[in-house]
Length: 254
Ligand code: LHQ
Image (cartoon, rainbow, N blue to C red):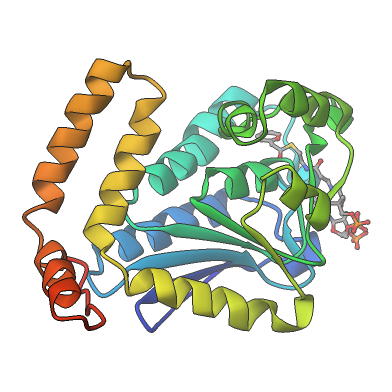
């Protein structure tokens, strides 16, 4: 249900149930977890792309497998919550390449990533409300932080489709890319990130997430801790040398 490929320092994770618009199943959760773990451990990998096969990004929970005996709280605790935590705790940039519709927990998945690149064919739907449910999988955390409380309420409660251009205007996506050049542009962006100082990116990610739960005094100290680590990396030395020698730096991610 997942395709995992690597090239040029980038891990491509493709949700692969196109006939169901890449709806989540327990097996897909298992395979996704595994793929993210492999990407985390592989030192050659310095950026991760998550995308969908076919015309959709991800349509959220597979409703055709709906088992009425399951407690949805447990479904979240066992599948979705660890997935969102794995993306957030992965100290490498994770890019959601939103090739088509992202609905329900599919939208949540995109919101938890560090960057969202949208094809002109992409759209977002807070589909939960249409089946009498509430946004989950970090949606209630990330959406108001991305677009502000008022807009997040509107999207979550009304559940209207947000087109790619509207998503860009809301700051929900980094960029909207014409569908014909979507994959090549995503690749270029991911390769660019994969040649940057990965350790520093990981630290930015860790402490920017943490800042939501911190006061200024704590953030100042976290910055000092992060800078102490970043200051000891090869990439810091290389960046300074390259600057002094007026040449392009060659970062190794350490
Ligand atoms: C699907 C799905 C799908 C199965 C399309 N499942 N087959 C977490 C934990 C526990 C419990 C519950 O929930 C959650 C979080 C959630 O994610 S709740 C929200 C679940 N997702 C949805 O409610 C979205 C359902 N899908 C849709 O609203 C539409 O399919 C969208 C707007 C995504 C796309 O619309 P269209 O482009 O018109 O495509 P379509 O509806 O014709 O879908 C194509 C096929 O994919 C179709 O099957 P068929 O055999 O008729 O060709 C759909 O049944 C199937 N499909 N989403 N989530």
